[in-house]
Amino acid sequence: MKKLFVLLFGLVFCLRAQADLTIEITQGVDNPTIIGIVPFGWSGTRGLPEDIPEIVRADLTLSGQFRSVPVKDMLAFPRAEAEVIYRDWRILGTEFLVTGDIQEVAGRFTVTFELFDILGQRKVFRKTVAGSESQLRDLAHFISDEVYEKITGIRGAFSTQVLYVEAFQQSLPTDRFRLMLADADGARPRLLLESKHPLMSPTWSADGKRVAYVSFETGRAAIFVQELATARREQVTNFKGLNGAPAFSPDGERLALVLSKDGNPELYTLHLGTRQLSRVTQHFAIDTEPSWTPDGKALVFTSNRGGKPQIYKVTLATGIVERLTFAGDYNARARVSPDGKSLVMVHRSNGVFHIATQDIQSGDLRVLTETYLDESPSIAPNGAMLMYATRFQGKGILAAVSLDAGVKFRLPSKQGDVREPAWSPFFD
Image (cartoon, rainbow, N blue to C red; front, top):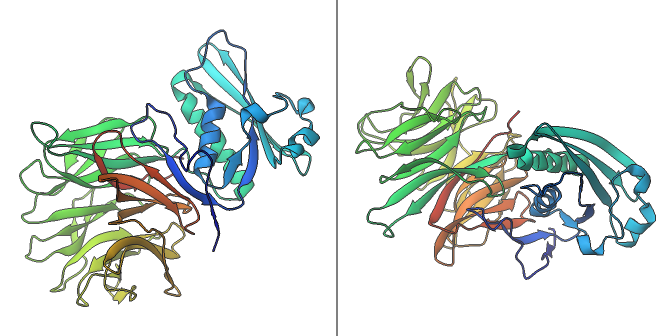
């Protein structure tokens, strides 16, 4: 198990004070890769609204796997390969170096960036990316993704986003609930929906163009699907009783959901094009919280059919159900990793709810978090991290942990309680 590496500045590294969610990194790996990110060249006459190299520096630090060389310690600020003196960077312990240059033509910004292997004394790549002024932060995340993947071999997820529910209870004349969308680092929060009625269970379509969630605005639980580009929303269920826990299929054509219209909570699938409803489970116990396997052939779900909540899997073609979890007396809200090899879930140990991961093949279970009342895990599309809801200093916050438990960070909100995170897919 990796030793813990506590980052500098009193355990806290904060990003963008104006972000609704701010990052507080609490734990990283014990041997982070040391990287230098040089201030990028800029020939414009005005200041840029986004500091691209600073965002890249923050992204890579956020992963817990990198430590950046402080700008004040740098001996030079090279812009071209010929200006890189490898010996100077080795003195600082630098292993990789990122340089860049920004040009503006007719309102379009072109960023050319290079990655150097300091120990190998070679240029790894040179790439160019372009966008509008409003996309400067996107360009920075793209650079972070490219650098991260080249060094670690894992696709970067800095350009992804996260859904979450923000609750303002007893602080206004009436309670307020907001469905929010933000960058994965908490920046650029965007309001998708505000309601005086509870909002629950947000989830993404596989293409990242739609979201589904549960709203009580009709007087009872109902499932809505909303297009992000147009804000067009549609109620897709109106059954009596429970309508909950929507989950898009990998192909985006169906929703898995929980309905109690026939008296008992059971799993169903709803074809969004034809509105054909298919019942998946039929048991006197409670079946809930469905999640798709990556191949779309099965659902994992929570059921108390064994006496206490545990995780089960049902194959859609056959209806065959098998139990997946046995350790502990409570396992719920499971999600399958993108490679299909492991589960993340809420696991109760000694009366406290933690987030745990379990190898599906071997059954080996590992507790990832140590805080109180951890819930609602959601896995990053690259499978490297997961986000979850927890409590910190009396407030509901979001937190994240790597699948090996070596990296942890918190995303507290400056406003209400935040809960129920849903990490987006890659936006290809």
